[in-house]
Length: 217
Image 1 (cartoon, rainbow, N blue to C red):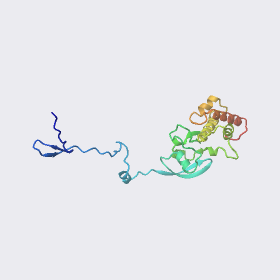
Image 2 (image 1 turned 90 degrees about the horizontal axis):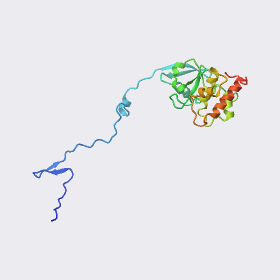
Image 3 (image 1 turned 90 degrees about the vertical axis):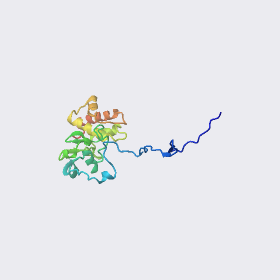
Image 4 (image 1 turned 135 degrees about the vertical axis):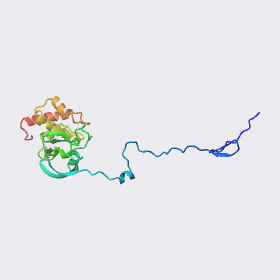
């Protein structure tokens, strides 16, 4: 005997025992609109209407490559930001957390990462960038050696490399061994050269500087 087929009830309605149609009271579907993660600052209209906190600024005298400059600087501004903001783009912006050494400058003769140095802390101290070591007409022995040995490929890391090498030759040893050079440049990263020609360049420059063939300190 074949079974009698029954017509399915319409979605959203079901029959009661008394023959009355009752609406299906289901919970509404959750909204698919993304919600901001808990703990992160709000963005959009509500955040834009909130008053922004003002950052204190100060007018400083900065001694950059032997020249005094009066610069208005925010309290949270790094030396990297200040230098590049005023046009010293020879100071490269790399990792911005002190790992790569591309932003290195000399501060009173010592190499520092400018991305980790607040500008307010360096007023009236001697700041030297790679442009302050030598010129096209009178290059520093390190600049000459890097060019002659082919130590630069993309060139992005080279300003920081030369700054670190100058700091080592001036403050640590003027007759470095290969191990000395490796340690002296250990805070600087290069993704192109494999470092061998960079080490050769520093050795060559150190020999030239010790022989009296250059007047750079």
